[in-house]
Amino acid sequence: MKSIRIENSKWGLINNLVVLIISMIGYVRYDYDVGSSSFYQSALIETFAPIQRGTTSLKESVVKIVDHYFLIVNTSKENVKLKSKIEGLQNDLFVMSEVQKENERLKRLLEFGKEIPKKKVLAKIVAWDSSSEFRVLRINKGSNDNIKKKDPVITINGVVGYIYRVTPNYSDILTILDQNNRADAIVARTRSHGIVEGVSKDKCILKYVARTEQVELGDEVITAGLGTIYPKGLKIGRITKIDKENFGITQAIEITPSVNFNKLEEVVVFTQADKVAGKDEI
Amino acid sequence: MRYNLKDVALSTLKSALLLVILEVIGSAFFPAIGLTNFRPAFSVLIVLYVAFKINTPLLPFVILVIQNVHSIFSIEGWAISTLIGVLVAIAVKYFKDLLDFSTAVSTIVVVQISQIIWFVLLALFLSIKLSDFSNFLTILWQFIPESIALSLVSPWFFSLLDKMWVSKSQNSRI
Image (cartoon, rainbow over all chains, first blue to last red; front, side, top):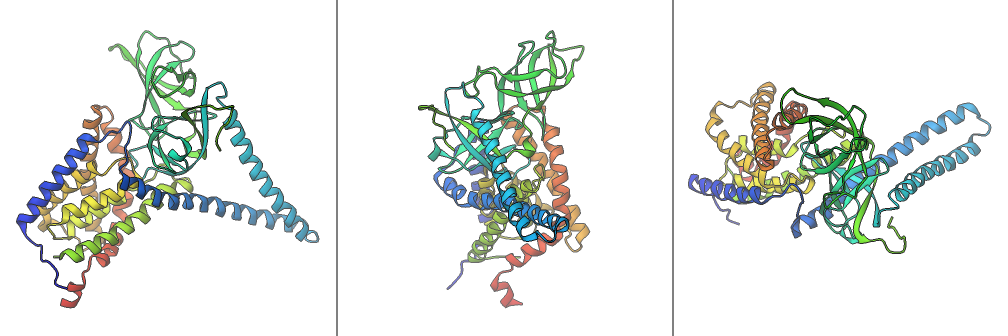
């Protein structure tokens, strides 16, 4: 087959211009607050997210095998005669305790926020955003589970973020650590109002709090419920740093989120569908 | 190196598949082993490679495809990084004669400088998009550890990509 020779500086210039214009339009139109995914992007996410999920699950299996291996070694040292019996029992016990731990975590998650009249969907974290400038998590539930964009995501410890992008079986969460995520918040003790914004890998800032407000280190910050996303009263974090300059009308407040994002495994999504007869989805 | 359409399409596909593997490692494997804050931008490394070494008028479209694959794994989207990729590729074209990839050290230095330029542009475009320049240095600073790691592996990574981008026609000429 005859191949087409395409080396041509004029074509290079035209191609550069075409792609620059396309990407410029894409850049201007792109929304970092709420995402949209085209059909082909959804299809690709649906194709590759199971690989991400498999990678995460693989790690869990390896950890279980390694833990189990050390457990068996220790047991055999303690009692050689009862080795086979103990191995079996320890194996069962280990599996049961892991299941029990998971059940307890999930139960606590489901019981949390009982008073909020929203349907809850339990989901597992399958991946993080591959760019370090964005604090985004991918979960294993999507529009098939009634999850929609801007649904709030929480854990028993507090707010995680909201749903940014949805495909049939997966969703991306824009966490409160991301600078594109802004949440209405109040300091629980003083009722001072402000906006929480992500700023780094493990910190947020509380903006627009007046200098005259007497906030203190350790004060708890909760959602104000004024926006359209988060219900009122959910924990966001605690104040860990206050910078009050001699000038300006506001103070710089740093918050450490109450959720430990490095150890996050499961989350709850409050879906917009109203709760039906106390049923939640797992 | 000069390429025809078939070679470009095939090598782009191979690079895209490599990127998928690397993105899965970066987005799922690293966080699973506790490295939640270490996510190297492999797509940047691939785009830098094609900008440095591949001579084809289809280069902007190769960058577009690579960044589209990246957008599956990141909310960064394809547009911003394609824009930066094409701008960097145009700049590289004018400095190509000054760039040296003969030794590992020179490759590391060139890649590190290019990445800094890339991330300055990225922080700038993101700040413009958010209408907030207060986090410009924070955004820039968080790229540094990952960019150093990427620069250090770049000589090996580039030799891997060299194998993917060697066309059959070039082999037959040799």
